[in-house]
Amino acid sequence: MARAIIAQMISKHPSLVLVEEFSSAIEAIKYLNNNEVDLIFLDIHMPGFTGFDFIQTIKKPPSTILVTSDRNFAIEAFEYDCIVDYLVKPITEDRFSKAVKKATAKNEDKPAPTPVPSQQNEPADTTTEFYVNIDRRLIKIDIATINLIEAKGDYIQIKTEDKNYTVHSTLKKIEEKLPTSLFLKVHRTYIINIKKIIDIEDNSVLIAKDVIPVSRANRPELMKRLNML
Image (cartoon, rainbow, N blue to C red; front, top):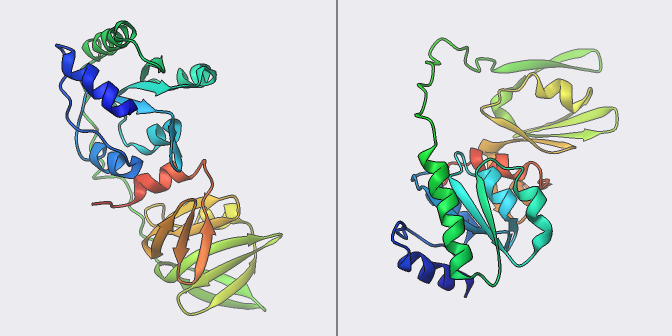
């Protein structure tokens, strides 16, 4: 109902053209990560996602007008540069027009994009293995075979495709040795190989036979890193 009302208001506004609307946050993220738009109207409360999680997940969030029935989020909303206004339901046409005017003014004031420096000379992730000390033996682990690393007190457990290794170390120390193109810390006790993800459901991922929790703070970065169709 809220989307239908906003769509109707957009259709009446002379400076707006409705490009798409979505009932699924995931579908909207896929679209926005592959298409440029000038403005989105975003509800704060969505199944499995908040509007703030949504904004953090988008690679380049466009100007955003939040829509909600809860006034208590107003202060948090303006911590995000992309948010230009905050509409409280029920929305009146006058208040809607004022919000659009703010968004239009902000887009007109945007500076021209600056060229991105070439990254050709930056070092790539070239490390393919490291060694761990287990029972006075140095054992080589191929990084590409690692499924996940779990912190367990003063130890970490490295789970590979074939074998598990328990090592006296910290999650932070091993994170520094892992290529960022493959690995992501998704929880205070877990680092995962994003190439090994089989399934994602709610706030967890499945890797091999392990269900790994994903914290709310780390979920937006995970969603950014996924190659979604």
